[in-house]
Length: 71
Length: 358
Image (cartoon, rainbow over the protein chains, first blue to last red):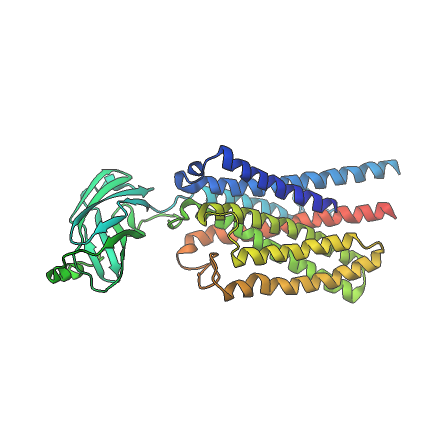
């Protein structure tokens, strides 16, 4: 369930980012230089999501380590 | 649960290092290899038949100046029915004007005549913009001008040397997303397949370990699937003009993800471990069996914006040439390996947790 929460969070983050991008970053910006910023956005979404997932996994392992020490 | 000491490099299995190297290569090559020259804009969009028209052409990655005198331009109606530009004037590397006379008669009868602009010179090779200009029929027609359509052919064209990705209209630079968006789905499908395989093994052997493995692969598969969906939406916004156009491919892949998300929800609602594992195994094999028609069969049966469906070719032709394959295949392999790696980490964590719990 915790994983699902994180996945949900990642989706929200991505949606919020693109939604925000509509306000701050204009359509002109996204389509400038042959729409290269779309590729940048896609790469960023992938990297951020993977890092968030790994961060959450790391936290999980840390708590396990703590429990292991206490027992 | 460590990797066995043998066969590791700095304590990590060689294939994990390989996945990192492959993905580093994919990111570098995917970003740095330039696109072939192309045409992004032609003004005016309309021309009246029986009159001369001066087209202002804006190029992309082009270098018109290097062959100022040799740039040739054609307007193509169909096949060999083409007009050669009477005059081409180069202004700078990305701007030129081409003067055409559009004959007042056309070899076939249509309401409007879409014309494709073709440019060719030695340095850039050939670049094409489909439907660059729409010709409106003339009021006074002179049948003698019919022959103008057949005087010239598109011939002696050049090909640009060196390694470049194809320039596709509308897509332009976003063609690079092929290396990032598409492998997400390949990875998801493979992870779900591995997961279904472990579910089958659980059914046969009843070992709870297989259940844990299959769940780890589902979790990471879901992550990749959601990434595929989100990156696809971002790409769609800038090529199809909407994040979600209710395209059959989008709908079906969303349903597929919802089926797997429902599996995780169902799993968390069952108390008993054995029952949980049995239910998961059955549902998971069913879900994977559904994945095939949802992703590969239904989208092919109707019209779709997405390449590879409804008559749109994918993985072939101009959308994926041999230069792109040199990045695309490593990207698929690299992301699949990364997915398996993360799945294993999830599995190892869950296993530790179970051991500590008991």
